Image (cartoon, rainbow over all chains, first blue to last red; front, side, top):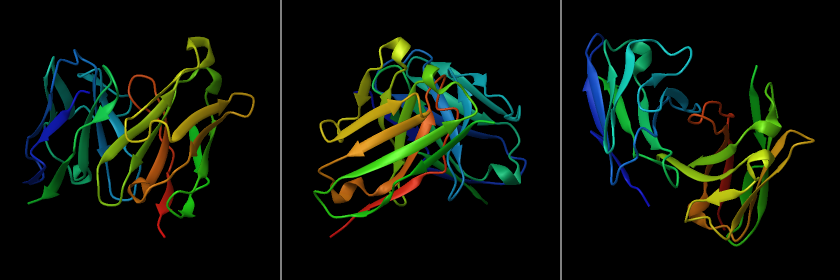
Length: 106
Length: 118
C-alpha cells in the first residue's frame, strides 16, 4: 500500500503569513492527490483535488502543486479562519490519508 | 443542497456488531460512488471502504484493518448507504463519516460516534 507522509506535523504561524505544507507519497500517485481542511468537531472539507484544482467555493489563497511523489499545499496569506488541521489523501490506489498538519496561531 | 446524514452509532462490546446508515439527498445517489471514513478520538482520518455505483459494477473495496469484518452496501431505492460492522474491536472506536467519492471526498456527513468498550 502507498504511504502518505505529511510535514510538518504542526506549525505555528501568524495572520498574513505564507504557509506551505508538504505531502510525500511512498510511490508515485501521479496527480491523484487531494487536500482537506478540518476544524475541531467538524467534518473535513475538500480544498484541492487532482493536486492543483481548487474546489468550488474555496478561497483562491489556497493552492496545490506537485505530481508523482511530492506535493505542496500553500496558503498565500493565512487568515484567522484557516487555523485548522490539513490532510492530504491519495486516490491512485487503495485510498489513504496523510497523518495531518495542525496549523496553530503563533 | 447535498445532505448526508449518518445514524446508528452507539456503544457496543468487543466482538459485537453494529450497522450504520447514511441517508443521502440533493444529488443522484444511484450514480455516486460512496465511501466511509473514520476518525478515532484525537487521531487523523482513516479511509474505511468504498462502494461504486451499480452502473460501474457496484463493487466494494476495504482498508486492510477492516477487511473481512466490515461490509458496505447501498439501497439506491432508499438513497441510503450502509456500513455493517462485525467482530468489533476497541480500536474501531471512532467517528464514522459517509462521503461522496468523486474527485476527492467532496461532501461529508456530520459523522456518528461508535464506541467499542467492555
